[in-house]
Image (cartoon, rainbow, N blue to C red; front, top):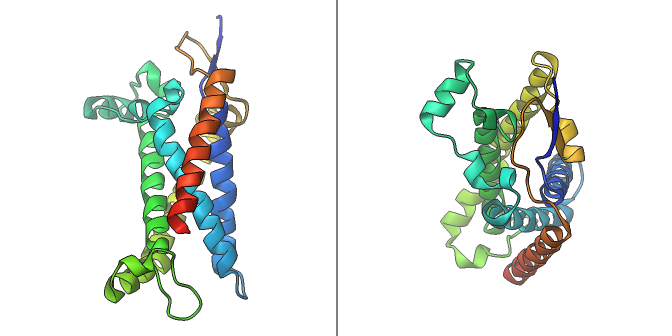
Length: 219
């Protein structure tokens, strides 16, 4: 049986993914480590905001399988996947459960960054946008950021890692390798994501614009 090597994850998506992983690990470490790491925690939070802004734009104009259009599945398609009748697209990019995981993770991270920007712990840190909200809102955002939001994010990360292990162990599907190499080997042909010099240069421009906008916002 012939196989087809398909570029699924373009380089900008892969760089975003691993940069976000590194930043989230750093955020959890600086939140839980003894001592005062709040300045580094804030810097990493700002970096995550820039990455998320890039991902929101790239989800509209990026490679085929990185676009939000590829993450949205009709209810009937989800039911078919759960019943063991996946569409071919489920085997190329994110399947319906993986897509839901990605969207939930992005939403949770946006909530964490947003509440961090307006938080005020009344001890060591005040978010750069705290002045734009009243005291009650700032304190509520701080409570969410340090409690519910943090543990929600940890739970989603745990589910994400567990799913990767499950698919690797039980279904013999490598989900990490393609996010490193960019390619998947499939038993059928599929449309690849664009990943050439021009698209990578465009991604660099998008990220630079997003980083600049975030820097202006927080300064």
